[in-house]
Amino acid sequence: GEDVEQSLFLSVREGDSSVINCTYTDSSSTYLYWYKQEPGAGLQLLTYIFSNMDMKQDQRLTVLLNKKDKHLSLRIADTQTGDSAIYFCASETGANNLFFGTGTRLTVIP
Amino acid sequence: EPEVTQTPSHQVTQMGQEVILRCVPISNHLYFYWYRQILGQKVEFLVSFYNNEISEKSEIFDDQFSVERPDGSNFTLKIRSTKLEDSAMYFCASKLTTGTTDTQYFGPGTRLTVL
Image (cartoon, rainbow over all chains, first blue to last red; front, side):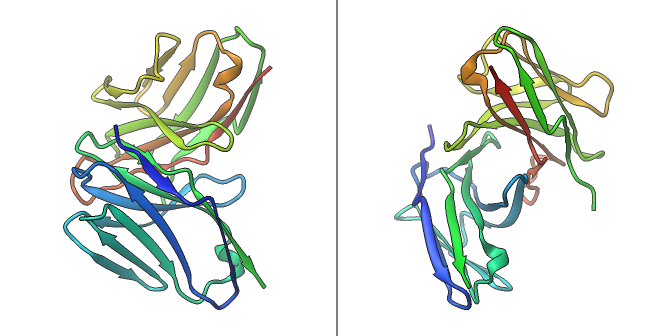
């Protein structure tokens, strides 16, 4: 089955850019997602990218997809303290089920 | 904005007891899902449900688990005889269709603690 991997922790200073990386194994992934989870809350969809795209920008968020290397990244520009959360990468295959990474805990230092 | 709701937010039960976790998906959505997240681990797919039947289930979803849409609005996950290792956060999700522009919307989760 699909295996999605992420680094566990990232710390950045407020105002800097954050880059969260993710790798996946299933080349038939159709969509790749980024979800945000704040303490005690559910999974909030941030953005997604279709597998035939290599970049998507949405305000402060930029998603880059390298399909050849099966590598996905999420860049958050001008990171704020409110961005502190766990960020999950998820891959959707033809079965429409999501495979999640372990999540990256982003800590923004004021 | 419509959202997926789940109750209870936290359920504590004794090992061997039955639990029912409840979800109210977004009203016009047709596809429903349960996922779980054991503390410190990945969010894992359990089961998907469409047209009143299971579409797909993972290896985790064994005979101890069942799902039901009893009344057209609720979507429930039942665990018949809970084990310690069932302790996790359980997320419900719903999706309008399986169309290429639709995404899954997640509820806030139910934290299940099995003692």
